[in-house]
Image (cartoon, rainbow, N blue to C red):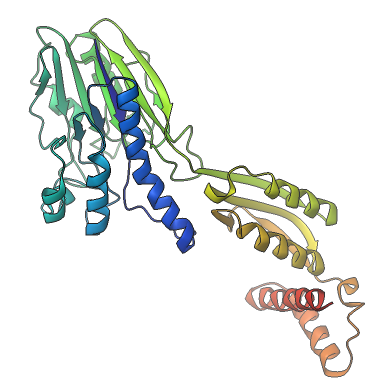
Length: 377
């Protein structure tokens, strides 16, 4: 029996355009903290090694500080760590794994899987990697790595790979897709006992054997991921496999569809945003639908502005939103405008009732006027 940690898609150096400077710093630190968490899990669960299945770094051109901090975090893991180059950080001439900083700072426990040569980790445990050497492989790297191998005489063989499995993301134009049928055939023949995969950021058990899995990313990266923020602790022998997902992530993405038709809905939105958990590590996106008056839109802008002060990030989806703003006479009844100001507002109202960029600009101007008037009062 061997016990190890299966992880992948660390993507160290990742940035997100919607994160402000402070939130980006926290998000960056969380990705390094995930590595330290892996070290703690390895100690607590008595794991013998760690495999990272590709995309260790966000890209090969990450800055030297990111590489140095990664090496420092990896040094806190007390067992061997095997790193597989993936599509974000392929082992080409510009590989981060060949950079001066990585080679100078790499801890002794860290090894890069550079080719498909089987690696004997200990008697009865063999590792076979399928590293990316370019961003567009022309073959199924798993099938190629396993093709020359027979069944091991004793013990288990673990394959470490990165990429899309054909049953999850069918693409006849992608020659590098991983064939699930071929992998499970190798498992049935005793050539392979576990296929550790990276690339998919969601925890995923592929096929029927229980021996082909994605660990997902140890820290969430986007909306729509299923159960990100985990690593897998795998117990394996030739006859049995046990897999446990262990939490490592601290950030979460949340997307909400919100219907807005008046003041009551705005109050509900305020309550919704106030109820988000761990706000500083929450990245939220709203799909807004409905119709508001300009005054209500000004209230909405105020609600969103306050929420952004405490959330990690808050976006309003452009593609997913269909919010109409209608200038209403009631919006301006109490402003006490006269003369030039009154005529200017009337022209803006006429313009705002149309369509196109000019109408949007007019609505924004009227909304700002209402907000400033409310704040002044």
